[in-house]
Length: 100
Image (cartoon, rainbow, N blue to C red):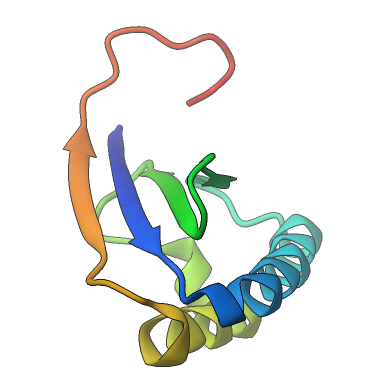
């Protein structure tokens, strides 16, 4: 299990666009049902800040990379939505109930 947490600050004028695209992306992920991945986005209370959590069964394989909806959102995220550099931290779960 390899859990990563990404923190991203989105430009205020792009948050609605990013959230709408994220909902469409998650609908596509749900429809595709990729194996070996758990993925979530969370909006934080302070304006424009989000956490993305991802857990891969195999670090060498990203099942999301085969989904056009995911690759399109990642391109927009890196291209025009980000207000500040994205940060990433490796997490080591010590316990989880139906989360990972």
